[in-house]
Image (tube, rainbow, N blue to C red):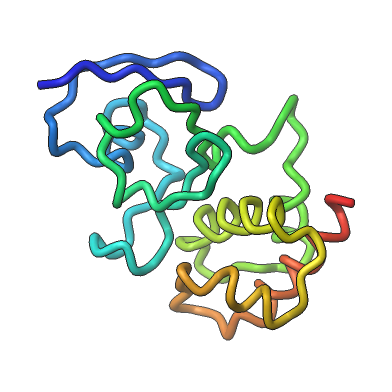
Length: 154
């Protein structure tokens, strides 16, 4: 067992975890933050994307002990003061979802991607989201939502 401490969505948390505990499982099981989805167990789908120290990461590829001391933001912590984050608003406005299972990961990946590329082309959007899979849509509304997110973030 290892002791981990991290700030998650602005609140400091600490717990004992097994060395093999994934960050995704720690967030879901220990903290009850079930918006971080686990969709594939192979780091292919991106449903588990969170921000760690300001960077989008797949939390199923990070051990909880690797996140010790980190600042983590999950989909539950993206909104501030009851106001949806611009990316959350854009996904709602553009209906960038269908079943919704991939949506938290898509939103977190989009927010991270737009930090580095605030005015992406459509091709850059496709490349920026290639680590996130949606099994329901043709990505048309997701791409629209990313474009709208860029507009709202300006």
